Image 1 (spheres, rainbow, N blue to C red):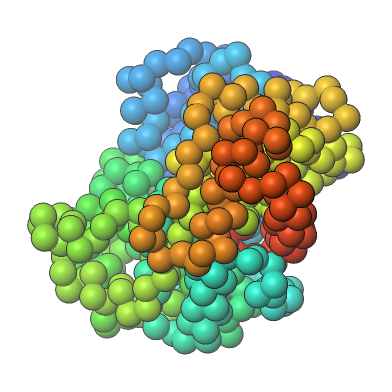
Image 2: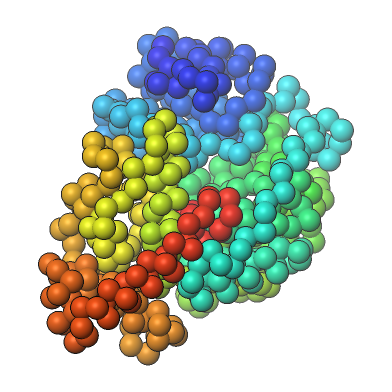
Length: 456
């Protein structure tokens, strides 16, 4: 057995080398994630995956494989494994994967199912009240409006539908809504709709009774029960199978549900927040999403703009990511050179904040310089600088001018050349760049304060 670099004060680690040892561990304690090495010699790794998914379906399972096998990866996805890493595995990548999928609160396996609302359910740990996000955190009008709508909606029990491209920060915005709602001291529970098969998704969501399907060795409560009194976040709701949609509609309309294989109806008191990167109106028209469910979810719609339409946030978010990964690495944040800043600001970021986070994290881990330079971002150096702004777009003249200046500066060898192309003198360009830098400085924020400054 190996600790995979987790043997530090930052982690509380339990090692097990057999199904029996895994069972004893989950009976004795609660965990935020499980890493299973499928190459283990003492027992069948795949069998332990099945055992964990049946015993504690809400626990994220990360599988470590000895090879990059598409068929194996597909089988793991069908079993509900949230991530699979093929060897050789970099410790940094493993730790980043665990951080990305670990639950906010540990979960364990009860010896026998009990009614969650009863006293046998562990009370939710109080979540500290976060400071109110400041509208001065961003100069971008669309991002500021998004945050304002989210905070107003937080005080309502109405269903919320968060719309936006992949990686724009939808899950973080959902967490922020919960953290600024009257339910902040109750659970916030996430269901990743695309990650599980139809059968496992129903079990993950509603729970199941013993014998309901192959591998259901005992009664289990689903995430609806775990979220009792709090918020249930349905991530990528557009991928919810049609067979599960009527059951979710009943939960929304009647606050009732049944576990898989059970006929007894149970009541649920949960607030629903859903998110999707799909056009649900088009999905409804195509017959892939129920119209009545769409309207029940779409009581309050919040559209999260892509990163390319809020360039003022690029460096603020990049500095926040760099500070976070530097803290995890146990060293001071190196900062960015001017060339690196121009490169980051000139990229179109099709993967939005998730792409920005990954690029910054990779550069921070591999760089040996005193500051991150353009050469630390090789994947961006081979791509042309593209802006998401378009003539006639719903943006201010100031934002359009700022984006255009940044793109020209990033794509020219000198400020003199940029000034010539812009047909302004160099001193005017210096003043405009200084004003832009002052504005960008206001974007510095922590990961807890601004919902739209983090990726989902």
